[in-house]
Amino acid sequence: MPIERIHHVAYRCKDAKQTVEWYGKYLGMNFILAIAENQVPSTKAPDPYMHVFLDAGAGNVLAFFELPNSPAMGRDSNTPEWVQHIAFKVGSVDELEQIKARLQADGIEVVGLTDHTIFKSIYFFDPNGHRLELAADTATPKMAKDLDEVKWAMLNEWAQTKRAPTHAAWMHESEFKH
Image (tube, rainbow, N blue to C red; front, side):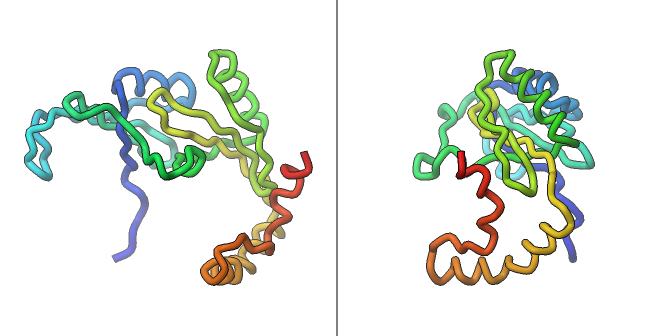
């Protein structure tokens, strides 16, 4: 039985209303559903929650849980902040630059425009501390073909050496020249 698509991805938030408003303002995500209970349907645990769902485009749904009776949110202290993130595709580099300017105008720190050669991206944090990436594709068909041809060799080399294979080092050459 094949997977059709991701139904939704859920994260925790500090404040459901603030989260819905922030994602609407900065990323244009519409608020599509709220579910709230005083008991968890799957575990039957008595744990009130607000579960909000946002339209992330193209049938993708991003959801958040506010859990007022749980300890404060934390993160995995053994994983660097840059690792765990949600990446969203935007239509163009111009759009990316416009969103970056809007975020910065409101005092939100933005890293990038980072050039990954096959896409350019910016990185920032939402009010809950979740790292977000917005990416605009820039790959040519040849780049995609070249990367497809080396993916297994790269993965197999990594599995044996735990060192970065150089098959696709061309992707970040311009970033590391700076």
